[in-house]
Image (cartoon, rainbow, N blue to C red; front, top):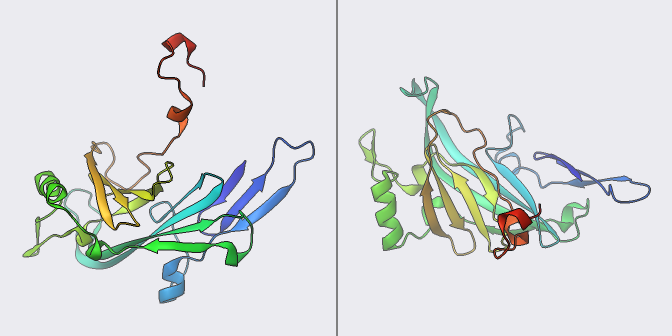
Length: 215
């Protein structure tokens, strides 16, 4: 069992042991703190996600470059801001240890450098995510308000990202958008958690009858 502070670290306990003990694993410092000297503040969920995948501890961090705008969002009533670019990065700790040096940076991708093939370009245009006029300029992928990075549990290097009304599945190593899906957020105008990954389907026998499925 683990208790997670996404800014600082994880406290693990082997609850199956006859004499459980606690051990701590520190997390990498936020990139904004290292690169820009900013402090750690606010909820980390819009910027960080973590998972244990095939015996490795993995973390994703999303750095968003924004500027506040002197106006309120007409839909939410909150302060508006402009997004210049966003940059997800993934880390791996194969030893699941508390040593800083055991965290390895796997890859980083800037939204402004992500490839969009013709099929995905068409989907993005149809969804209204791209080429939306903002202050006389066309909105691009790098201008999307993106948050809530979640690692795929399939060990395929994919990361789920959430925008205000859509979420994206991005393959970080290939720096390519893999898929796009829409869902309603009419009851929630903010960026609260809207989905979570699960590997429960890998334990379900598709040939079993509903009465024989065990969880």
